[in-house]
Length: 283
Image (tube, rainbow, N blue to C red):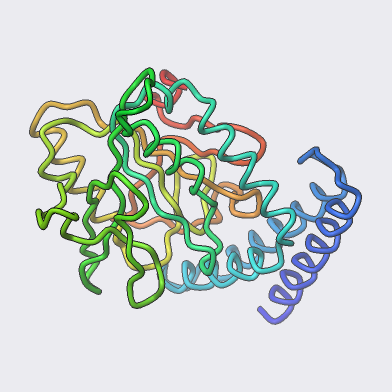
């Protein structure tokens, strides 16, 4: 294991070095040989570690992988991360499935957690709710509010970024009461279905597996919403994860447990990756 960790550290350093070089030369492409090689080395190191620790429990494997991905994200230069944020948000904003959506749930990105930025996406959705603008499809936006430490989270409707307040961890969340003193609409109580969930996470693969931060909040919420949609005979929402290039793993690297909720598609800097039949149809 000591050697595996050394390989991961070396791969992370090499990747950071190549990313820094690419940023210094203002290379616009995300497919340079140097970066791809470093990224492959990192993924190989992750894969080696996972294979070695197969005897460990899934929770231990997840904990180790989370640690590795956090280090990789920390090593990602700010300029490179900004480029990837821009590319990912452009892909979402220009997509037909986003433009045609009428209601969606999206996370409010947190810089401290190094999540893919969603600020432009959120701003565009909220612009669509402004009655002064004539837009093709009016959109409703629900964003997460963590209720406790027992994996309970709600998605509450907002109409402005002014509806957000910082919680104890300095993460922006919707206040439970709106400016008029009324409770905000909970997506679980809405009278219409949600078209899209934009999801964060730490690691993903091209088979739809997602590794979160360990709280289980999205797994619980998505399970409840799936049951609600089935009960009301609604179409299931499209579950789309946003991922930096270093967050996409090879098959078999992410430990999977029965409570893990898979995603329908990934959006990375290099493009959309439809996975489920629903995503293949809509994307």
